[in-house]
Structures are given as C-alpha cells and as structure tokens.
Image 1 (cartoon, helix red, strand yellow):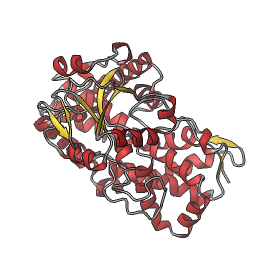
Image 2: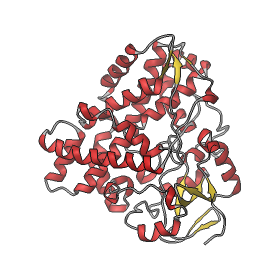
Image 3: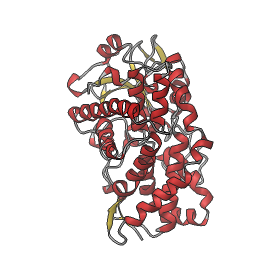
Length: 402
C-alpha cells in the first residue's frame, strides 16, 4: 500500500470553492489519495480519466456486497463515517452488472424525454404559482421559497407522495448528503428509509397512478424486485428527484451575478437549453461521485491503485479540466458543453436527467422573464455553501425580485 498521506478534503476552502483544490490535485497526479468521510479514496480529476472510469464496466459500486474487504482496507477515521443501514443501500445506485441493469430497467421508461415533456404545463403552473406569492422589492431566499418547493411539488406528484409526507423529506435528504455531523447524516438517512417503508404500506392500501405504486405492483406481482430493493429505490428517487433544486439555485446565482447573461437570455430564449447545460458543467452538482473500486489493481494514467481501494471520480474537476473545455472557469452561455459530466456517464448516468433539465429550464425562464431586474441581495462571494465532500449545494440564495 502506498505510504502517501491522504489529503483531508472537507476544509472550509474546499466547501467555499472546490475548484482550486481540484486544480492542485490535478497538477499533483492523475489520482491522489484523499480522506473523505473517514475513508481513504483516490480522487481522479482529469476529464479523460474520469470518463474512462465511468464507462468501465469493471469498476464496481456495490460496496455493501464487498464491505468485509473494501471497508476495513480503506477506513481511516471510523468516527467520521456515517453508518447507513445495508438494507437501505440496495438500489440501482449501489449495484453492479445484472442487478443494476435489472433495477434500472424498472425505471428507464418513466424518464423518457417524451414522457417527461408531458409534465411541462404542470411545472410551469407550479413555478408561476410560487412566484405569485413572493414579495417584490425585499429580500427573499430563492432556494427556500422557489427552487426547493417547486422541485418538491413536481417530485411528490410524480411519486404519489401524500400531502402530509411532503414537508420533511427535503430536509432529511439534505441532512443525509450535506449534514454538518455524522449524527445528522445518519438521522437523515434513517428517516428517509423509514419513509420509504411507510410508503410501501401506504401504496398497498391506497394505490394510485404514480411511480411508487407502479414499482410496488412489480414487487407484488412476483416481479424481480424485493422489499429492500423497493425501499432503497424509493429513497434514491426522493434524493435524486430533489437534485434539480441544486441546479436551479446555482443557476440563478450565476445568472443574477451576470446581467449581460440575463439580457442575452431575454433576447434569445432559445439559449435557455444551453444555459442549463453550462450551469451543470460550471457548477456540477457532484464535486465527487460515490466511490467505485476494482477487484484487481488498476492503472490511472501511470498511477497504480491497489485492488479494493475506493476511487472517487470528480465531475466537478473534470468539467473544469482545461484539456477538455477551453477557459473552463469562464461561464459562457454559448459554450459547446457536449460531453460534460454533470449528469454522469456510462451505465450509471443519471436516469432523471431529462426531468432535471426541464425543471431547471422552466424555473429559470419563468423567473427571469417575469422579473428581469432581479438581483442578488448579497455579494456572490458571501453566498454560503453546504458542507460535505460530495455535493455542491447552496445553503440559500438571498435575492430581491424586480
């Protein structure tokens, strides 16, 4: 095993702006050992290497199945590692090969672009209704009052979540992914899993025309999805389906700091699609992706990573790699963003990307065209970001509509 001392990643500097840290890692080596959530992981920051690993079918994600070897080998600080129930980690997100393909097949049809497009009127109505309630001329948090409730409404309707169960889960998934302590992360994960188990019982009693019910029917009809997989899939849908909140919030922050970009979007509305892609490239929701590992030693551009070592590829770094995107630290609405990794790549590419793109575009377009003189209520450098090594999320977005 290498004797290189892993770099501690979750510093205030990394939270505020990870890209300088990624640049340093990229300059140091193609793969660098870092300490993440109590584990040693190898951070991979070059675009070409990230793309190759994401596309490699030999890269494994099912740490639960291999935990007796992978976890002890990589553990550095047990007190920094959240303990998540194994039964809650059996979704497509954490599986490999045939199991991953089987579980993904149950969801792939739900997020076809043609099917997602049918949600356009409902998303537009929800965005307009939320803006109708917001004050004009005084500070308002656009994450808390606009982005999050919009995404929560769309997701809850899609999943069939009852009204009484819609208020708390956004906070639980926020705690699980970007909590400030191990206890907070564990509590958020536990509450989400309990909600998923409760929804199984709810949908047994009160089925509906919704995604939760359709998945339950596959299970009840003797289909190839067991209870742990069903509950884990519910949790992943609640977490992944909340992610457009991130793109909407960071997108508004970027645009409101650039009046020329807003003028360009108003004059050329066809650029909103490209704006969404550039937002997700420039401020990737994932700083790092959940770790992968290989059952044999693997070489990453000349660096040998031993078998069973956790590897954390970085979309945030890859999307700012100057070898792939010229002037990567410049936000450019007309940039050619093809190939960006903001939605992942390969077998685990984000299934919900069509819905996330649509929600983000509608949220940005609806607000900007109605309130084109909206401005930030705080300097952009004073915006607060959520802690955590993996996710890039604003803690709030104070702005003044106008």
